[in-house]
Every structure is written in structure tokens, then in C-alpha cells.
Length: 264
Ligand code: MN
Image (cartoon, rainbow, N blue to C red; front, side, top):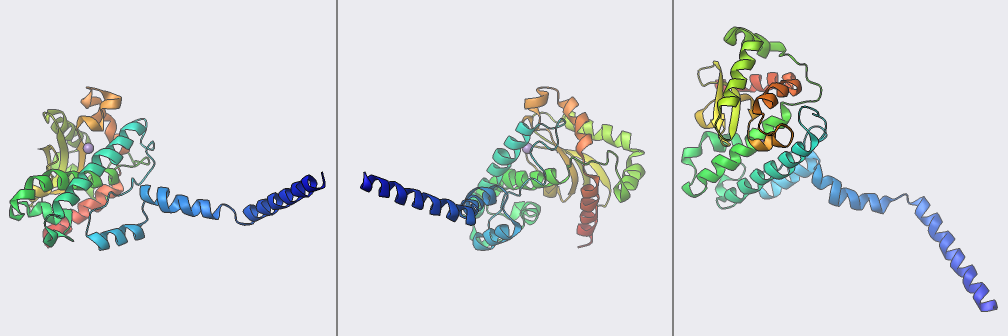
């Protein structure tokens, strides 16, 4: 009995000390484990990104600038999750695979690769066209959307749209028609052409406007993967709804970049 009692005492003592220890070290080790394995992989800090890029010269899947469900009801959470985590991630992986075969290309921007596609080694040319295009197009796509859309164009792009197309409604219709008429998979675009004019265009597959020397100011993804879960075959409804999530501030920034790129 005596032995049993002292054993129980020692056991309780150890338990008490453990509890005090845990409460004094508030989930530090657990938090560290989560940060280094889960959270940072999903949303890499810019520092981690830079380190990763510097190490291997690779392209990195950028994190979504908002939550997966932030654009609902216009774009649902499940579509955003698959679209970003699976489709875009796939383009990045395939692009890195192609570049790893030609280390001399490491460090080039995806824009530079696409603008100079015809001079790339032939064995990776179509992979870069499809997956480099996919990476550039989707990186733009996430950025030109926001849950806090202004609804209407603002700033310099608003004036430029009015000057070129007459008014926003006419531009919107022309853009949506480009998206509706794209047979199969592709994109509808507003580009700044080499000649410095605004134009509504459409490309097939993941072809980037950079391939033709045009600057993609804004584009909408009309691949079925972008809308089918929510809109099924109603591409027109998706195109109409999409204007509710356009980030005109970002579109203005891209308009500025497009004009700068003409000067250089
Ligand atoms: Mn897509």
C-alpha cells in the first residue's frame, strides 16, 4: 500500500510539473511545426518566395490575394480552390520542368520568355507557350479581381475606355462577345497593342497577348474550369457576373505598366 501511494504521489507530481511546463510554453513548438510545414507552404511569405527563387531560379505559385470564398457568389469557393491550387499550380510545375532542361533560361521573367517564344529551344517551346502562358494569365487574373470591386472603371483606364469604345457599356459588350465567341477554351482580353491603342481581343488555350507583342491589361478566363461548377454551360451568365469582381485599381496599374513597356 505504501509503495502504491508513493507511486501515485510521484505520478501526480510529474503530471503537475508537465502541466505547468506546457502552460508556460504556450504551444510554441506546435505553432512552429504548423508554420514551417503547413501555413508557409500554402501562403509563402515573400521572403520564402525570394529564397526559393534565388535558390533554384524557379517560378512560384503566388498565393491568392484574398480568401477562396471572397468572390462568392460571383465565383464560388470550390471553383477558386481547384482553379488556383490545381490548375495554376500545374502550369507552374510544368513551366519549371521545361526551364530545368535549359538552365541558361533560369532567371528570365515569364513575360520575357513569352515575348521571345520563337527563339526558345524547340523542345520546350510549346510547353512554355501553354504553361508559361497559363502562369502569366492566371497571375494577372487573381490580381485583377477583388471582393471590393468599384463596379465601374476609375482613373485613366475609364477615360481611355470611353475614348476608344464610346462608353463602358459598349466596351463591356464587346469584351463579353469576345469571351462568348471563343470556341472551346481561351481568354477574352483588353490589351494595349504595340501601336499604343486599346483593343478587345481573344486568344485560344493559354496563349498570352505577349506572344503577339500586345500587353494584357485585363482578361477573363473562359475555360470551363473557371465557371462550370457554378454556371455549367451558361458562359454568358459568368461573363456578365464577372464585372462585379473586377479590381479597377489593379487594372489601372496594369494600364500604366503597359504604357511603360511601350517606351522601353
Ligand atoms: Mn484558368
